Image (cartoon, rainbow, N blue to C red; front, top):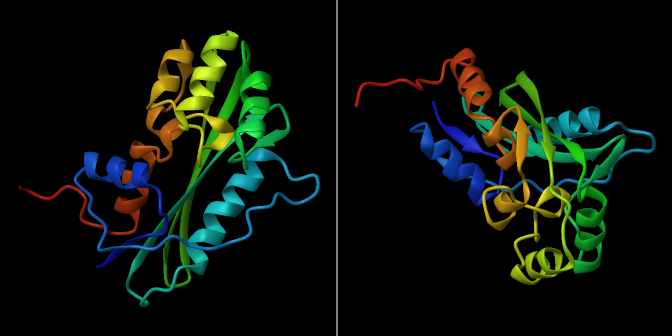
Length: 191
């Protein structure tokens, strides 16, 4: 059984490696990630993961694993910032506040889908101008939902988290392992 990771994210590859999973192929799916009018963050995230899994070409017996991570501030979806100005606006909005990080995981084999969404609550400290500007200058905001990556420099900006740390990074490992097991992927092999 081949496993295809439907994500170009190096963080997702690294997270899978933590549980001994090395995909046979990695394909970054190309989809329109624009939220629909009135779409709520959790529904949006689940749709993105499903669409990513469905668009990746695979043989009938192959497993395709795809995920999407969304930062939600109330009903507002904070995706990947287009530029430093948008990243700054996201970080200013998150400064000193709790928000939700939702990661949806979808596994497909042929026409069969297995899916889970994991929601974590995260509090970002109140950012000083120095912290904000230094983080923006680091460039770590690029390609990250909400404009930050907790696994890097932004880890110093998050004093509190309730939920799945790996989900906030981009792939909740406990839930992903359960989905792989449900699909018959041999996760726990003797070394």
